Amino acid sequence: RVIGKAIEQCENPPRVWLQASTATIYEDSYDRPNDEFTGVIGGNEPNVPDTWKFSIDVATSWEKTLDEANTPHTRKVKLRSAIILSPDEGGIFDVLLRLVGFGLGGKVASGRQMMSCVHYKDFITAIFWIIENEDISDVINICSP
Image 1 (spheres, rainbow, N blue to C red):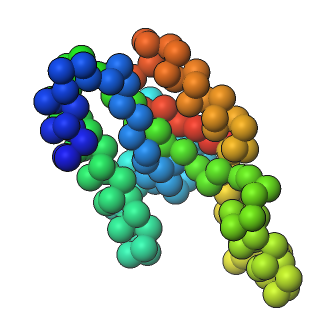
Image 2: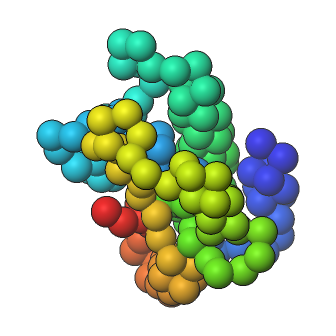
Image 3: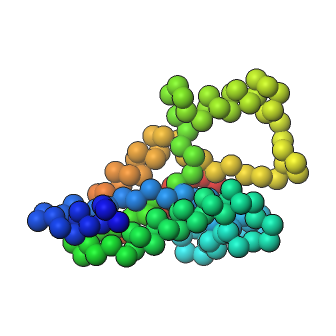
């Protein structure tokens, strides 16, 4: 809200507001892809873990607040990104390698779980593309698969 109010009061507002969100906002599914057009927002599935519901609630609240901001001269984009993979120290690779070191690198439960991700260079390229293409607004997914 504070950012929205600040932009609203700007004499020269920014051209674009990129709001971080998450690709994990979607309902877990194996039978269909989730995208910005047909994806079903999750959190209401039967037996959804509280931690997942909390994450989805935070993301939907952030996105709702962005939608409510009165910024008619600023294009708003919701970045629904997956985990960003980078070789830099302290990133998710360190966590995953540590798990493998503990013998936890194999499949979990049924093994059907997917982990969407995006390489950091692809993420940066997507950000520049979004900024440069002024017809891009609302929700953009930055992830694979």
